[in-house]
Length: 133
Length: 190
Image (cartoon, rainbow over the protein chains, first blue to last red):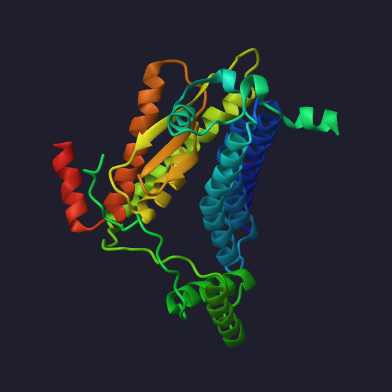
């Protein structure tokens, strides 16, 4: 075991863990679903990448490298897709703070095309639905 | 509206492939071997068989692809992606710890230059990892994306978000596009 590589690995793990922590704080503190997805896609992805690099330094063997590369690549490919799907659904079901959305060009285009997203005064959030049931 | 070069035929829904997809199976075999962490004949064979099965059970529409892979531009794209990822992580992490600040967000419409499914996918993936933006809606027929931009303070921020999307598309075209498409880009930037 090489102590220098161990220290480098530990530093990467530490920074990765800090970024994942920041992502979870964002997940709790951000105002609506879409902004929360920002926290879940960006610092979280980099945090995981740093953890993977840290693992590569501290394990110091060749065999797990393939899996680590796979973890990193799949994370980079899938995190945006997951963020997109959740964000899209949140937008369509009205789970967003539309007062803080200026401008909202998707809503303008949808309105021009004759679609109406039920939001604002008539919006039914999860809380309303739960209260009724 | 219809002046955009059509590099992929994204208009009509294409029939999904109903035959054995060898390339997919090879990729799946590589992934399978990486997952198990050792290269044995049984692993390669089972990964390959699984790949064939996935290709048959979950067929994807074919990618209409005329370009070629450009390593230098691709390396530049990856480097830009990593830089953006670090930048955006820091920005979003800083926002998470910021108290007493009400965020204003925006949804911005961006019309892409091309209408290829491949570039649309790549561009969306790249955008998601750039500071404060997330694709919430993509239209493949019109080659248009709607981007949710976080913490917008001025109209300049919106212009920047729009420019960033087009830049991501440019990177995608430069690393995978055909000669014509790259020439088109060069003409445009001149």
